[in-house]
Amino acid sequence: MKIVINSHIKGSIALNHLLESMCKQKEFDQYEVLIVIGGYYDHDTYKCRKEGNITYIECNHNSMDLTALITMFELYKEAEEEYYFYLHDTCKVGDQFYEKLKSINLAGVSSIKINRHFSMNIGVYSQRIINTFGDLLVSLKNFSDDSLIALKKTQYAEDHIFNHDPNNKILDNYDGHNFTGPTNYYNTGTMRIVEYYPSLDLYKIKANWGQANHDVLTN
Image (cartoon, rainbow, N blue to C red; front, side):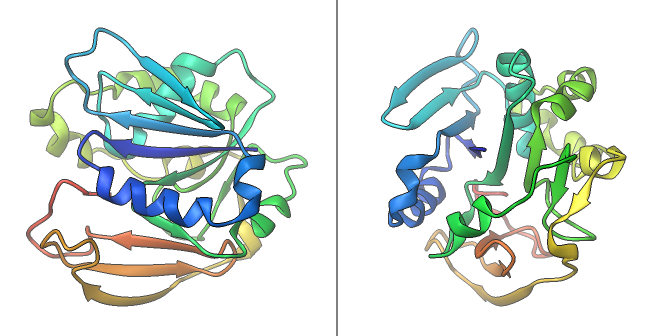
């Protein structure tokens, strides 16, 4: 399984924090990591560069949580046998993350949520299931920050693929999460809660939990 990180041109603080936690484990080098960075509106198309086991993909669109899924459809649709673990840059992994990731059984699976109710699009996707929803994903491709508010209000913004995939599974049948906060986690002025998902040893540093003011790290 490859690891796909959804990020943004202004998300370097969060992204570097996530990568630091990922690189601490020796298993990091065993995974191919795709970092999809939205918001490069001045690009004519995608620009890719590879550094070790990491491929950075700069996108001329930004569709929030859907940016990486759109990109995977447009650039990797021929790789139908691939599986990806998708997460946001505003995450952190613990010492057992790779061990738990490796233990996921992909037999008969096209997608896996990490939580029964709200998974924030985080989880496992097959390329086949991404391709199935490809036309919808492309229709939500956004080329302007002015359109983000409208996109966030659509019914497709969160967990749409998971909720409409008849073969979707829930990782360890998990329901709920442990959380702490709020705190000024990234020292950017935005208060965040930290959700913990023990089935993956994964932390989600979350801004959109009801407060009025968000910084650029909106995931």
